[in-house]
Image (cartoon, rainbow, N blue to C red; front, side):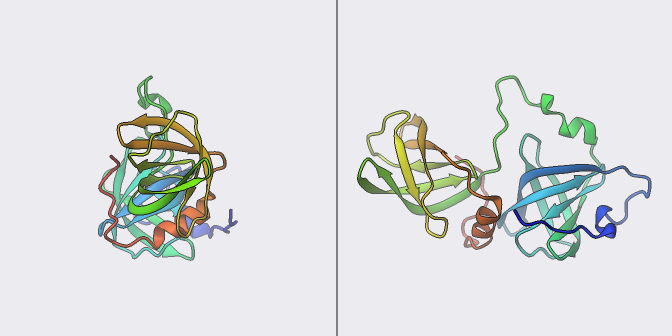
Amino acid sequence: MRNIAVAPEASLVPDQRTDERFTTLFRVARVVAEDGAQHLCLIRNIGAGGLMLETYAAFDPGMAVRVEPKGSEPVAGRICWVKDRNAGVTFDAPIDVAAYLNPQQLSAQETPRGPRLTVHRRARLRVGVMWHLVDLLDLSQKGAKVKSDLPMEMDAAVELMIEGLGSPSGRVRWIKEDRIGIEFSTAIALADLAEWASALPEAEEAAGGE
C-alpha cells in the first residue's frame, strides 16, 4: 500500500475542540457520497467530532458522505477539508469513540465483514475448465457475490474474471438459490479495488447489498 505522509494540520478536523483526543486507526471503510458514488478509503484517525480518510478518489469540501467502517455502524458527515490524498470528515453529530470502536457492539452471531461495493455488471466465472457469464452483485477485498443458475457445489474451486481487476481465484463458501458467495484465496489490494471503484459508473449506486 502507498505510504502517505500526514501533514501536522491534517491530524485535526477543523471546528472541533482543541483538546479533543484522536484515536489512530487503520480501518478500511466504504464511503458513499451524496450522489450515490461508492469509494473505498482508509480511516487514519477518528475523534468524537470527525475523522481523517486516506482517499483514492477526489472529494469536494462540503460534500455529504456516509462512512461505513468494518465492524461499526455507518456515520454521516461532510467533507470539511481535502489535502493531497487525505480528507477530513466532520460528523453530523458527535460520537462516543470508545463505544463506537468496541467490537462488542456486534451481536454474538455477527462476524465483521469487510466493506462491500454494490455493483451491477457482468463477470466471468470459471468452474473446472469452463467459463460462464454471471452477474456480479457485490465485491470486497476478500470475496464476491454473484448471481447465476449454474449447478454449483460447496467449496468448489473457481476463478472470477472482473474487467479491470484481473481474475482472483477462490472457493464457493455459500449458495442460496441463484446467489453464490465466493471467498478469494488472496485479498485484492485496497489501492487496486479502491481505484477500480472510483471508476464505477454513477448508475452503480450504493443501494445496499442483496
